[in-house]
Amino acid sequence: METSIVDIVIGMQYGDEGKGKIANQLVSTGNYDYVVRFNGGGNAGHTIYLNGEKIVTHLVPCGILHGIPSVIGNGCVINTQKLFDELEYLKGFGFDVSILKIAENAHIITQDHIDEDSKDTKIGTTRTGNGPCYRDKYARTGLRAKNVPELEPYLIDMHSLIHSSPKKFLAEGAQGYWLDIDFGDYPYVTSSNTGVGAVLNNGFNYKQVRNVVGVIKCYSTYVGAKGYQKDDARFQQLREIGQEYGATTGRPRQIDWLDLDEVITACQMNGIDRLIVNKMDVLNKVQNGWNWYQDGKLYSVDDEGTFSLCLMSKIIQNIPDINIEFQGQLH
Ligand code: IMP
Ligand code: MG
View 1 (tube, rainbow, N blue to C red):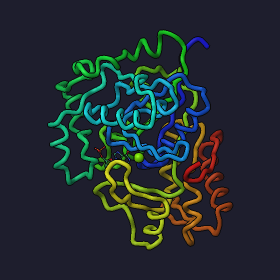
View 2 (view 1 turned 90 degrees about the vertical axis):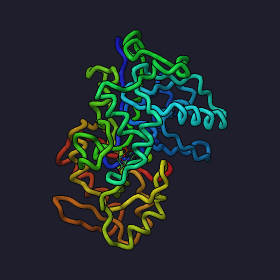
View 3 (view 1 turned 60 degrees about the vertical axis):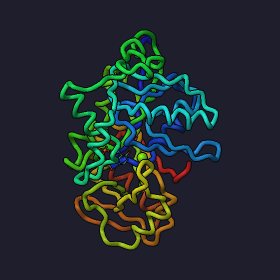
View 4 (view 1 turned 60 degrees about the horizontal axis):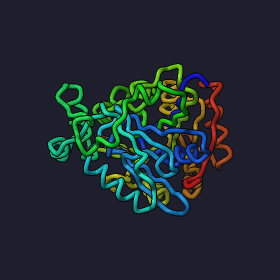
């Protein structure tokens, strides 16, 4: 191996697809030297079940749960106080958090960012200061991690980390492709790019990208201010069975059936090699739950097997070399 490689896990819907679970599975294989977060900040919520324990992280990459050095990349925005609180929380489980690294050119969320974001009613943000922080980054008035003395022990330079010697990286995405600042339903989006391109903006070059894993749920959820959920009692049932409440804000997620057109577009735009369809066990518990949209029409089938086959054949028609895998909620 002459150069570093990076495998990437990204969401193909509106976040909360179960990326945390998949990243955790991949990291458990012991095949990676580093895990990197490449976008977003404390707006993300990654729920991981490890040895029967539920662990929720917002900023710290899942490598820390496996003793693998982990990096908050320059594409992320950091609330320093929240980061230290999360490190304390993880120390409480016995994890070694000293192996965390932070890109010196990542941006810092200030109290002013949080205060401003807390007044939001238009987008339904997570009120974590994300949008105002990215705005100041692009206005060239922001504060970088290297200007914060408490972060000094963690700081690294992405170029030397990635390019000084060959290593295997897993890049763990936050949010989902349809919350992307460019391709999502603007303005109901987050303030970062959430797709595969964002990984390259953290110092990887395009030749280093090896495998791109897309993650979806077998139904859709969205959290935010726009009206998304339709009037159907089955969605209420789905929310309870699937525990569809925001990991960061506790807000109920709005629910709809799977939108296959969205999924296919996201897979094409991100060059997905392997697509994981999560929460099949949840949909199985909902009466007449096997539904999806395609070409603006609603399709319904009777059972899980037919649903999986239909999804596979429709996706493969558009992306012939994709690998599709179905999973349950916890494993
Ligand atoms: P912000 O990222 O806090 O600015 O929020 C913008 C939009 O993205 C809102 O609709 C949030 O609910 C949504 N959002 C941000 N992060 C996540 C996430 O990790 N999961 C799901 N939705 C998210
Ligand atoms: Mg989440």
